[in-house]
Length: 154
Length: 251
Image: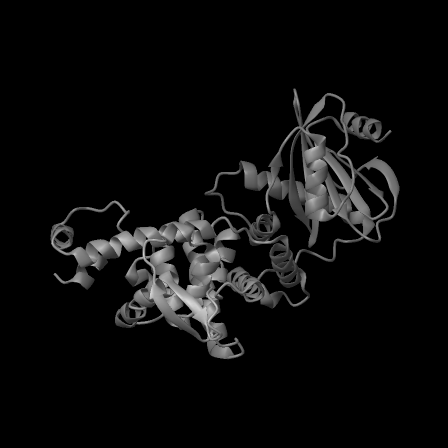
């Protein structure tokens, strides 16, 4: 449950309410489809795939998510990974479109192979590769000192 | 081999892999490509950041919502939503609580003892699945204060765990009984263990402990109720001994 919630937070850009709702959707979907599997690793992956699908289905179904706050990135500040907390990662994730966000979560964070991730997301491998190209955007968002439009550092 | 191919061939880098020709060529590419080496260094750093996410635990509120949604689907009259046949009837009347306790005991025993290859009936699987889904954690402790805190946190119950002569507290965990969240407190003795079940129920009709006549002789069950709480003790004891032990613990 914790791992699902953490993934939901990443996919929801750190929004707790949306993450909770996404977890509930995922478990309900999983509950209806689940075939008993005694391998914990397979079960974990099975849930992760459904989390991503639930997220993408939501995104397709409705566009009521508030758009990300526009921000101007100014200074790249490499070498500060050790100071980065989860919320900074979520903020960076929120700057990505839903597809790339899902692809990066599966492949980079959950260590899925590209082919498995493409299958889980029901996209062609080439599409997945394009989505993974957003990794550079994620890194820049993560490392950049970000300012909002009022010029306040975040 | 270009950068994209090399990274794909070595992904994820921490996984053990057979060193075939592709892997050899990918590693060779890496040796001469600072860009790819930087890619994997950043990947490692990114993983470290994500490791901090793992410190975030799902709030109890999420577990409650999941539980409510699953329970509603599981016990809804329209069983099509869950694809699982409902248990026979609504087992919520007072007279059938002993049966429900025995069923729960069976589920717990199956989950803990049976070989994982055993084929379980779908209802049993779902019951266990739900039980695990809602259980934030179980605690292993012989400290009554810790069990009291556990009950308060998980169920909002303020009560002291019972003391059974000759038995010591062993652990407590969340259980699920016909869609109701409860707790099971396990006590260990020299000759076996007993389990005390507590299931909050607003319309519980207070009654004294008595031996269940519905357990089919599988294992003795003593049930009773206090205001807003159905309770039962199940144990590896003779029926009369279990009733006496329970009655003594309530004095």
